[in-house]
Length: 169
Image (cartoon, rainbow, N blue to C red; front, side, top):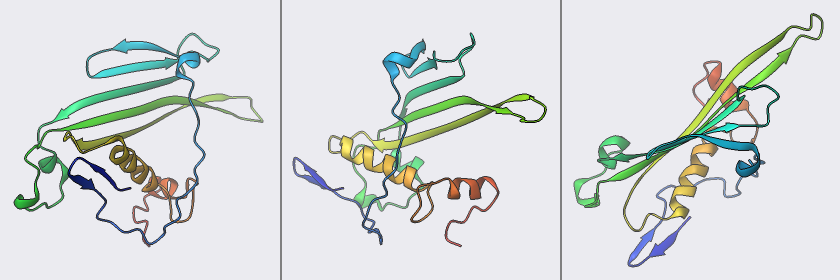
């Protein structure tokens, strides 16, 4: 990812050893057909999946946006004062998915409902030269950080859930 807006060229400071991107198949949600808005505010919208058989929704989505007063203070990376942008304001986005899985015992017939929840937050400065390309690159790197090297399965997220927090070893 590298682009130019006006006099500014924006590019990453990292160099990835693997240059071939992972191909990841994602679900394509049909918001208009399968969801309805249940709550709408100035900083948050909630949706409910309407495709379940019961009266209560079995999946809820939430989208949010909040202001960040100082992206340098909240980021935790050491940026020299001489290289800080004069605009410190930023934005934090939230994309959340909550849903239920059903587990059925093949012998007893017992059915259990299992709550699942995931979210992605992205934070970036609100300067004119941060484009959708920069935000999408952050999104892809964030998702990529949840995947083991060379894999597009749940190996790393399962390892982390089991307590193995170090993807290097």
